[in-house]
Length: 345
Image (cartoon, rainbow, N blue to C red; front, side, top):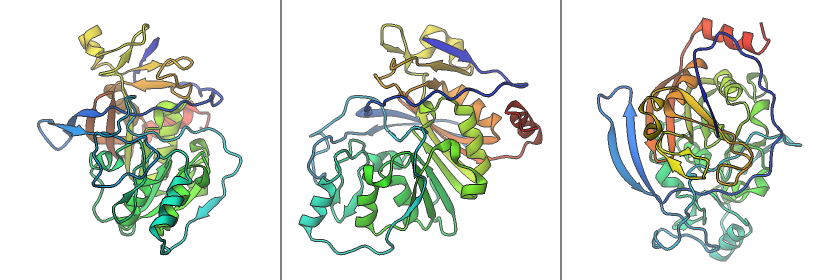
């Protein structure tokens, strides 16, 4: 395994993009020990969140036993890497939900081979996703009222987060490298009567010129799948005019050893947890998944965000994962060096 220290940058070159590799499925931990750190608070808040999941083919209902089906591999936000897509035409979903019989709803849900998100598409009818998405949604502090806001959901997968923010009044663009019909997005949008626009696209193709700017940008479970995470953050900053919500694998409590085991980073050396470092995963060394490239520690992720002109306002430590809530900041010097490093000055 390789790990790198992240130091303040004077200038660096452009990383060559590695071709997208075949991806393998991952899941998530059943129980999550969550530590919340808010920049406005003087002490962290600790709680334990149950995150059981279903991998069965039947519908998941609210009254179902959450212990009946579980997944054992760690990944609470499985979204999509930024590989190249042949078609980037947006798909506008219907604006009003149709009325379906119970049998029609079940048939539509079962037409999707692999659900990842649990989405309530009808009263007490929830898609059989392997991820308990409502539980993870609750870890974030999204605005209760999103009227007048534009939201960009990068790596939307089945669209749970996009649909939830739409319910709060936002205009949402959902981007994924899979077409909507290849995930649960199209079915969920139809059953919900959603107006969310879905666009099949690569994160590296997103720009203000093509897509405009957004009050909220979501980057959940994505950055560690990208060969150039700093470029991805730079793109997010260019299209973000408000807040970024990022979730990722981290190595603070899951540093990968040569034998495949995971250890706390601080157990190797107490100073490593505070040093901004990142571990590189060659081949399929993390979870037998060729699309896993990197994982930072929390200190490194925060410094990377700051280098891209985001101020981290809240963090949630979540087992081998962490989420970061950020606000955009202005820094002319950082902006200049970011441009210089990519030959744009």
